[in-house]
Length: 260
Ligand code: NAD
Image (cartoon, rainbow, N blue to C red; front, top):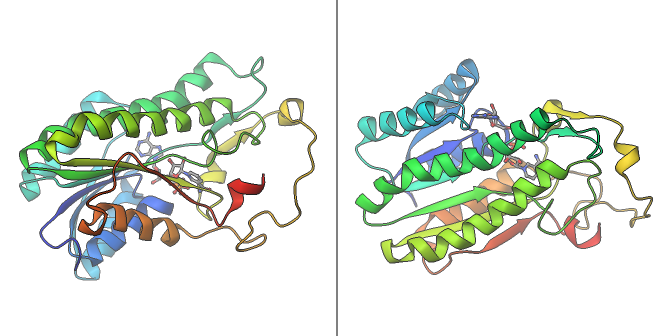
């Protein structure tokens, strides 16, 4: 029970990486506020945790909305009395398109959910982490924008992911005096629902015709990683075992970003 007595907030916990992490946190003794903007999805995550003997409350909020995020964090702290761990994970791929075709509203939506959402999550959580005498924040960025620049048309997405890495490093310094650690995980291709919510338009136009080695992921070949692979890393970063780690991006990609 690595997280016994701790309270965690996990955004984007309705599916994929966030859900796997929320389940793992709960299994390790944390009480978890599971957040997503889709009500039935997030209720299912909370029910699944409770059914297996854990503690969770569903929080319905859009991470890009100030009022909703403020209320979600308040509701969580009201229910469980404190906050120790924050996994700022909710995100979308959004629209991938050549820059001269990408519409301003499409750019804004990706930036608002991925970057403003991360800011709002941390902004409302930090006072409670300070009150708890410390804590751990983990952000989900990506190999895109940190090590790879080959997803044609994914400029808005990659820009938000690069910005999240910068944010983690800025905040690691700022919050160290409060014993709050801030780290960032950078997954490669993970089998989740994210591609179902991606729209790609004329991305060939944005592509550079390069040839990459045939095995896409050195460790697994064509197999994507699993959400649980990321969850294990997030648990480690949230736990006391990582007490001297802050401001660190960690790639969890089977070596994918080293060859593409
Ligand atoms: P997913 O689509 O399976 O899950 C995303 C979750 O976030 C869902 O619960 C969804 O409802 C929620 N969500 C989306 N927009 C939201 C909003 N505005 N407010 C609140 N909740 C919202 O995707 P995933 O692959 O698990 O993605 C999680 C994170 O991992 C994202 O930040 C993504 O950029 C990152 N990532 C994923 C991969 C991959 O290959 N799957 C690779 C690198 C990084």
